[in-house]
Length: 253
Image (tube, rainbow, N blue to C red):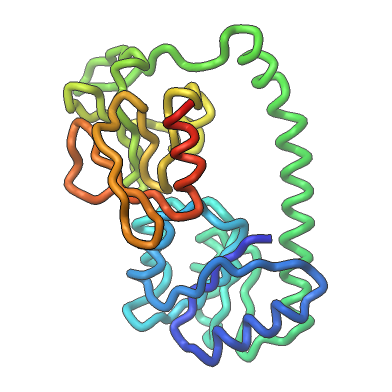
């Protein structure tokens, strides 16, 4: 189980790490993030973990701010010394709310809850998605066009005209090769399943990019990559170290 800890107090983070090491489940902690800003940056550059342990009161604000910037689709176990945030926590992917000091049995119970929910929804997804998969296999599978709205009109955009999709402030937008932007009514994860993976690649949490839109690939510190795409964007598009090898393999297919 891959997880991330968002916690600004070093002793609390170390305590949680030691408790996780004693659990009956295999837990791999990918990172310990100490602020809202650091958490947003990490989540933008890396694939979502399977589970997040999240403190609420961080050094630069409440961790709920993370959800305003990132579409966090994985479950969250909140860990906090305060009980007044529980209602808001359960509005943000919470599957449990652990009060500090965290008791080992409470942590074990929370992890067991996660596993049961995972088994339930994995089984349900397998049952309900089979007809869709079958349909894709029979029809060639992937979207040829997207119907989007511009003003009061609807227009159809050919898939080969799409440069990239990106997520921002809980919105998902499409940008075509001419630089026109359209708001989508689907999540980036949903769109990813509808486009040909030989053509589009989810380079990080924010961008799903057409290979033809990639103008340049640059080496970046710590074995990461930075993309330059067209139409140009104003922010750096970073591919994490963990994702870099798979991306290069995809580009060389």
